[in-house]
Length: 135
Image (tube, rainbow, N blue to C red; front, side, top):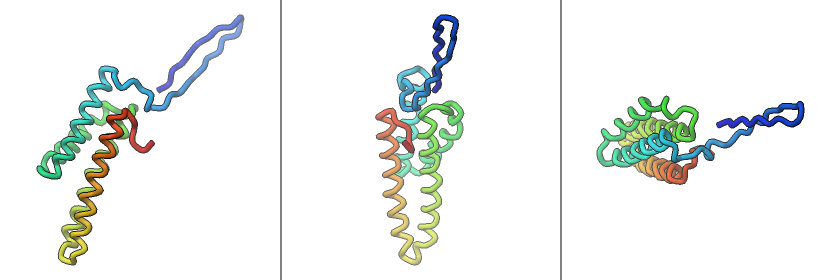
């Protein structure tokens, strides 16, 4: 977010450009508040997805449909985090299933489950603190 200030001193006019980190964006503005609620819902759907798988699919579809609404805000990092969590979870789930006949697959599935929960919790906590991911 860039804010511009104009100040005139005598005959000299100058412009000051100040950049604020995305984490300083007011989380209570109308659109961001709605988008933050949506991001919270998506984290909840991802968490429920560990018990009812279809909700994780619904969550990632919502991510892709609404991604343009959060572009350029600190919430965009959460959407990217959620999408990557979904696709890497699917990847390692398939790898775990394919290697389950070699016993190692069960360890891959367990690690994937723990990693997915970690990502959801970490993202949800950062969202609750109005912080972007990857900071």
